[in-house]
Image 1 (tube, one colour):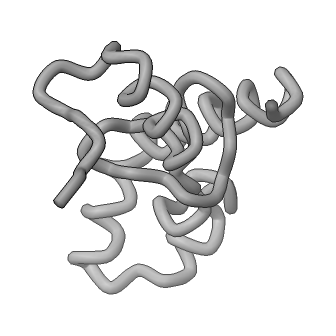
Image 2: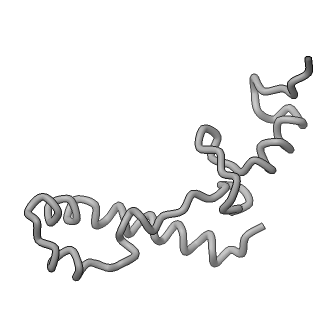
Length: 89
């Protein structure tokens, strides 16, 4: 499980990206790269990293569910995700 500070930092980054998205798009359209450079570095959408909503795990993230593969497997086996069951053939 990720530390709370790491998860909080990611949430803070997401808010910063949303805050500057419109301004960043306008500067990009105008071709003002000097103005873009003056924006906070963390406001770039490239800095965002998908993390599991429950554990904060950065790797093995499944976009469709918003959780990591490990958490997904545990929840699927417990029957907590509707319509998902272990494959057998």
